[in-house]
Length: 180
Image (cartoon, rainbow, N blue to C red; front, side, top):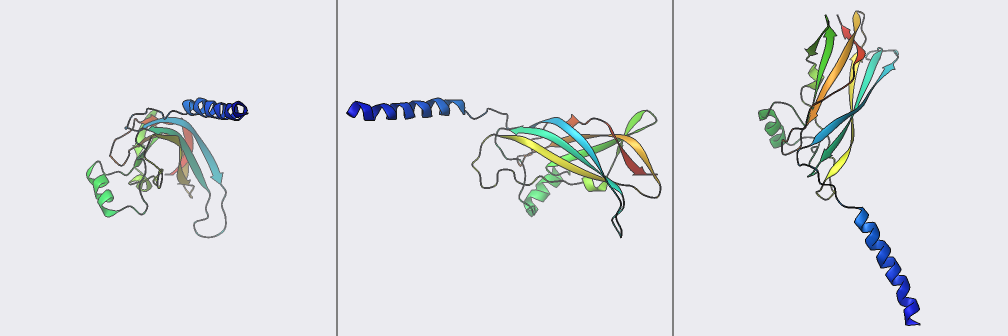
């Protein structure tokens, strides 16, 4: 009788050990690593009223891996964190650089909206450890009364709260409107 009661426990313990061995925490570097996943452009048609003009929404998707999981910041950003980012390159937790093709050469276009950008804390309230996932970044390009479509590409990099900077990835080229 006892033997019949003990066997199910051995089976359950054996299954638990087998399943737990399948879930080992990944061993990523503490410096974030990113890779380009995709880029998409969505045209939003004009509506009526101020600020309702036709525009393109560009969504850039990247994948990321980080060994210590300290990507992102509390929003609103504490003043001490803001000062730390400002004195270390003057950009936030991610940077998007925009390049448009002019005369067969890509030239950087400084956009005011890309000055200081922050990723929300991805691990808020969770235990410290390796993380991976995808991030979507959105850029808006307005059509105006005088615009021209330019082939455009982007370079993206992120950094964690320890100011470790990831590799830089470059997107595919798409055409978006710029004012003349």
